[in-house]
Image (tube, rainbow, N blue to C red; front, side, top):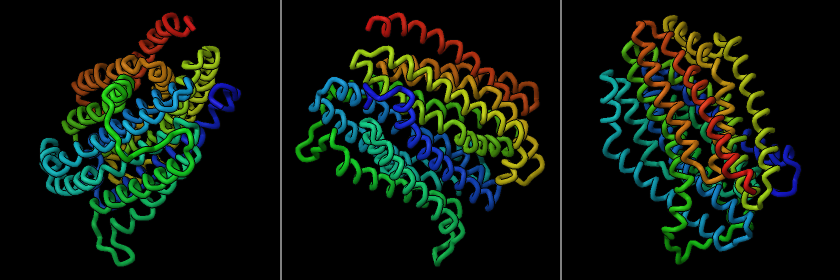
Length: 443
């Protein structure tokens, strides 16, 4: 399928289930914030300030998954069954090891993390409870993403989507029950949102594991007698580690932005938290294209079919640009309707409208960056994707945000995002031209 199906059909076949599952994932993230916002704005802030650590967990798990996906797909293209199995088993080992690191953080450092950002007791107490539960039970998200990636790498995205739907549906159902105490359960507040989240992740991981064991015939899982292979781990992290940093940079950027915005008000950080949940509806379909592109490009690079790589990438760019254009229109034309679901205070509402309208102007450039970055990762150049992300999320946006904050107007800070996207897109295109000349033209 990877090497023979028409490029458009192949891309849609793999990416559409991913898009749906990611949209469902985005939905239950938004549902979390929706229900938490009904407690208080401080409760919403607690979840918002926890976002960098949650995103860091996602970054480590997704980045490792990208490395597994890229290596496993190349080995499938080369018809090397032993190498396929080794990539899968060592990837699972890395997921377990990574989870243990976050368990330790949750036990010892959750409160310290919140106290370093704010002295508001309601935010500290609620945020500490929320983050502790999410990190201590982090094996759920690591298992869910790893087993989902294994299904995606062999083209079984429909099964991956089912796992995501089960996990997301569980979280959505449990959110109001655990937060407000329905059906005889105690009202747990912000902590209830965390319980609902990890329950959904664990159940989704269980479904993904089942499908891998029963339906994923290209991978032979041999848990008995497994020993880590440092050579395979290095190959996974050659692409995966830059991808981890690539995704996790958002955590450092958000933490830095929160520190800048707290200089204005907690209302500004609440808006930042709501924005990141809302923009996931726009970005998740493009991430679906990004994730689908990695195994397609990797397989066809291993099979030495450069024309299929170029055509698939161009199709993905067209789809990504269309999705981002829809996102711009929604954020420009409907900011009042969207924000009214989460925000009631007039001051916060006013800041939120300015944020949505300003930041969304850079969406088109984000789409270009995400698609070309997938090509970098699939060709074994995860470091190039990392460089672009560092510029986009740290080297450009944070200094710009700080400079704009000196104006004394919080609404000027939001312009740092679109300006950083334009700079990063130009650099990304320049690197892509270099990769084409050096690598694809040589096939």
